[in-house]
Image (cartoon, rainbow, N blue to C red):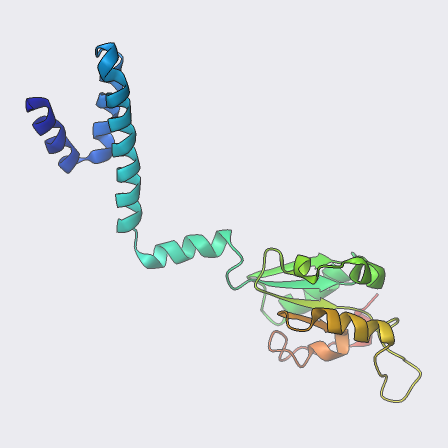
Length: 187
């Protein structure tokens, strides 16, 4: 009874630090008491972690989550590896660089080969796929309409927070409101 009162008094002062002597004393206790003492130490450690988490301000929790999850991240997927530095440079010139992940998809073949478009959303909340117009548009026709391949890929992405575009359409995005994307920027 006295041990219980002292333990509870120590727990009220510092639950986390109370668990250490309980663990240390478990080795000295009779065999029948050891399991109960270790369980008590584990319970105090677990409860101390919960109490510490409950005392953490919500803003601090959001800051930690922002760095470790896809909260507010945008993924910009380029057609090929050589397009990535160009897009990064363009986006950085307008001052929007944080919370953007850059990657490439391996050309129109890579886009077409992926049967599950959700793969493009891994690690982000929204994605933009920037493809050259060579296979996505009929470049010699008036108005440069989409090819059948581009229509099929747009249909596959419909309903998802993924936009399929070519460099000329990026200037209409909120991401790049002031960007002037010229053909000379693209390799």
